[in-house]
Length: 172
Image 1: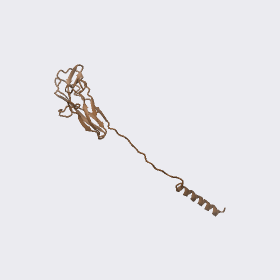
Image 2: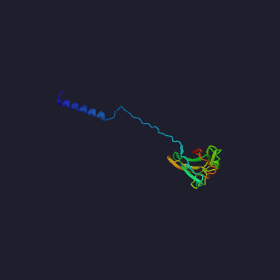
Image 3: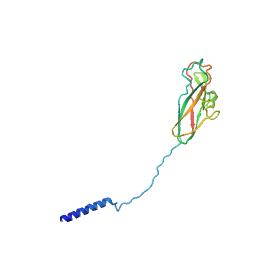
Image 4: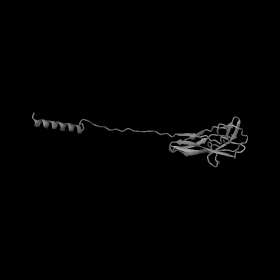
């Protein structure tokens, strides 16, 4: 083979290799299809609350009555989820809906108190039976609610720590 034929043959092979690389394989075929992507988000709520403390060192002979205090509750419900927040009467009331008998206890000694929806302390916060509950709509992040408390009297108070446990129920 002479030099001219070698160059032509090399150039032809190079052109053939480039053409095979750049053009799709004549024998290949494609097919397409679809698939779904899904997620199901359910309505959900969570709640937490801080202690409502009327005071750590109350002098019953000098305290201005009634004693008012407040605390916050954090509610988180999925966005657009309607909910209502109910409070029971507490562990010392003698019944979950006995709101007039809410009391904090120190052994056998009790002091009556009340929880309210509003800062004027005119609407008792309860479960919707003999009291009101708080409606709301979730926003997908924390919502802060205020619980207002009132300790109207210290008559008969003996020294010690008085406590009660109130159950919060969110219906959604």
